Amino acid sequence: MTGQGSLLHWPCCVPTELCQPKDGGAMCTNSKQPPQDHSVVETQSKPRSNSKASVFAHITLFLRTGHVLSSLAVLLCLANHKWSVNAYGVSGWMTWSFLIGQKANGFPLDKSLRSKKQKQHQRIRKEKPQQHNFTHRLLAAALKSHSGNISCMDFSSNGKYLATCADDRTVRIWSTKDFLQREHRSMRANVELDHATLVRFSPDCRAFVIWLANGETLRVFKMTKREDGGYTFTATPEDFPKKHKAPIINIGIADTGKFIMTASSDTTILIWNLKGQVLSTINTNQMNNIHAAISPCSRFVASCGFTPDVKVWEVCFGKKGDFQEVVRAFELKGHSAAVHFFAFSNDSRRMASVSKDGTWKLWDTDVEYKKQQDPYLLRTGRFEDASTVPCRLALSPDAQVLALASGSSIHLYNTRRGEKEESFEQVHGECITDLSFDITGRLLASCGDRAVRLFHNTPGHRAVVEEMQGLLKRASNESTRQRLQQQLTQAQEALKSLGVLKK
Image (cartoon, rainbow, N blue to C red; front, side):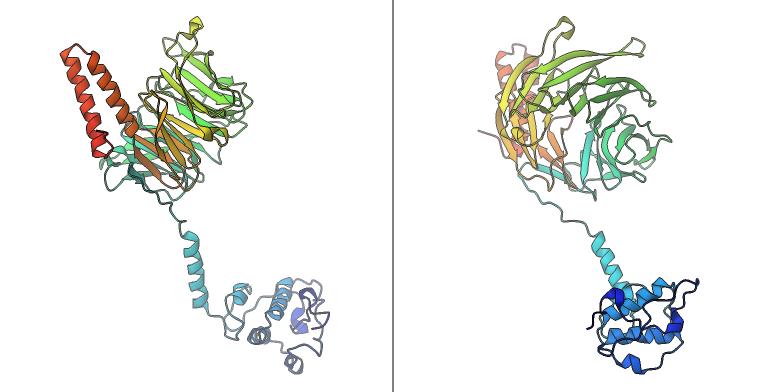
């Protein structure tokens, strides 16, 4: 091969008269006779034809003899002068699939083979990644309908539904009564030209709100029940206006239905009315926000971040339901490093927090903060994972069980004794993105890949057994004793059915 053998200086094998550009441009500078030591010398002795079929013959010859680069040079020359090949039924621009779709063996283009290979490639692209497999004796169910990773979930206030959102541009509504059945039904709501990263039910369970990943704003979907028992999901005509300047970390809807909260990763929390108007802006002064939430009682909004405390504000409304102000209520002080996460109990009288200092804490927040009364620290437990990786936390509705998630693992603690009772390792194929108890406290839900996994809350049943046994010893009223005994029996039967009842 001579020094002219590079692709940019390859001898042109196209007839000179065909190198004339259609648009009057410059003639191909590559149109010179190939050198004598070129491996395909037979092309020099043949007369050049003015037909386009001759060019096609040159390409075929090069392919037959294995000179793919020569064919590439011809095509580059043709493409440079906008010359289209119309020989032997090959119409339009010569495509690269002609070269890569066939072996350099001299066979003509096989269109059926090319289309078959294209279909095979399409099928390969559409194949879903391997689903993470997880088994455990306390695994109650795995909800698998999403084709993308799930980022958030929310139980409805009536306990009938679970909403999940994923990067597959869908929100799915699951029926909780099917959780312990063999099949798990779900209804799908499509998110047009975007996907949701956060989802929250409205208090009346007739709508849900999502945060749009690309739109960076809130969108409301109304749920209309059909005659067949299903639902129709309709997005409202207009989304909320864009107000945040940093990525969103959480959203929430007050159970009273009076306001919506959005919190971003800077230091901003916005309080909205249901019409999309900002009622108040809160500056948390925590360097950055890691988590924020509305209390179940709808009185408070709390946040945690870089500072070693949890700050709580009260959102005040008048007797007629009109918004008044947001005032500082109290703080949870006791950690020595940044707080990763916090959660409320169902009655908002307890709060739990987990910190980078490697501890979790349970607090009594049923205080008269207007009289300068501070929350009481009830329990401190160790969780070493929190000192090295970010963690999530969920508190059971009765505050008896604390669930901590780090990476793809979950650990359950009894808050009365501060002891770890259960651990679930490598629950998901990705890091856990959300963790929540259902409203009964009997199931714990987690998500992190394309599935939601539900666990039986055995520490919760044990806590009920311990509590009922203690109350029975002090109960003097017969009706009270019967009620306590009934709750004790139900908890014992639940543990027995799971095979974890201690005799």
